[in-house]
Amino acid sequence: MKPNYVFLLVCCILSVSQAKVAAQAPSNGFRVRAVNLGGWLVTEEWIKPSLFNAIPNKDLLDGTGIQFKSVTVGKYLCAESGGGTILVANRTDPSGWETFSLWRINENTFNLRVFNRQFVGLDTTKGSAGINLVAVKNTPGISETFQILRNSDDRNRVRIKASNGFFLQAKTEQLVTADSNGNEGWGDNDPSVFIMKNTGGLHGEFQVTNGYGPFVAPIVMKNHWDTFIVEEDFKFISSNGLNTVRIPVGWWIAYDPNPPKPFVGGSLRALDNAFLWATKYGLKVIIDLHAAPGSQNGWEHSASRDGSQEWGNSQDYIRQTVAVIDFLTARYAQNPSLYAVELLNEPRAPGVSLEAVTEYYKAGYAAVRKHSSTAYVVMSNRLGASNTELLAMAGALKGTVVDVHYYNLYIDLFKDMTAQQNIDYVYNDRRAELSVVTTSNGPLSFVGEWVAEWDVKNPTKEDYQRYAKAQLEVFGRATFGWAYWTLKNVNNHWSLEWMIKNGYITL
Image (tube, rainbow, N blue to C red):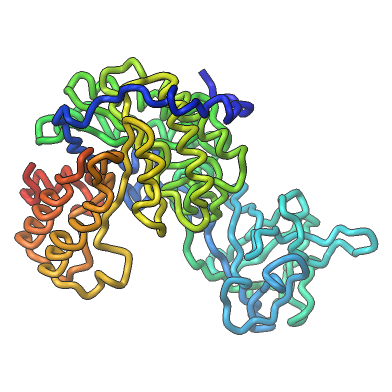
């Protein structure tokens, strides 16, 4: 079964009386004690860096920010006004307008997206010489295609070859053209030479599959899916006090075995295996839509190409996402291990509006209920918004869960906290936050992601043990349960497997 892009939203939004079917009652006493299988079916390099090692020019993946400094002018290329007009080379200090986001075609060929989301290209308007550089197109074509050629002795020295066969050169601060033969060596006297500075970028599913390309990516990803999570892991999970796995998936899984490029087929087979193993070892499964079409947060774990967050801005994206939920629920509704479907992971405010996410959650709920009257429907809070904004909407529908994520990381508040201050924060502040979303007659509460990692300097093993214990005690009050992020990770404290095996966490 494949999702249909003409899937009508209105067909999914059932009446409240239809949607309020009987889901498993929270009074049954079952609480989710889960681990996330992060980095498996939705790739994140920081979880498994080796997956990216063999990508040619792996520092030039989709979404990487690049700045170019002319060796002759001594200043940076810039999309004047952030886009919509010409390119210049007159900026001393690079920032947003001077940073170009890569769209990778192959290891040497790219489109260059500017701050306002147009693409750099040759000026092909009538009467132009076809050598001047502009950033005016919203969709890249041949004229917006460039090769970045690196000096073998200094890979940060580059030439940029345009589609007309000539190299870009900064003739003056105001005149950047594509009419150089680029045959004067790599010295500081050649206006076609630029110093390239990499400002970093994304390393997710889009980057790894497009980085390897259509011939190598299927081989690499199949090996990853077959080896990163295996049946023995489900046995380990089941035998160590856990009863559920939360499995992040990407929207392209519904189009297996031939998903839209650059994604490759095979993740659906891996998910099928996960359900077989879960059933064998008595585990429940939460399917978590971690990456939606257009990206709901602009981060690599939502498979964003270049940091853009477009989900929710288009009815098409919402319809497509509902269709993915429909597909997944239909496929696994009769499997005894299916416990819940999470409609969307971490939509980010204000890019995703409350109106858009509410519309989608109602339609996604109806899509689940079309196939299952017992599966819980999990709705993730918008990051950056109030934790209570979903309570009224979700509370009107039976069998719903509100997902909150708690990390003592990423913000300045935790930078200088001691171990004890972090532990106290969990017992006091996190407990209070969780109590707000844990209501007697509303949706169930779920701490869908947490970790026993922090910014504390030189903590002892006992510090980690007390910190993990505090979170287990507090998050155990969630009426639906909790899920640790994640089972496996090269960073030890993010790996629940390592934490259990080394005595940091006892369940």
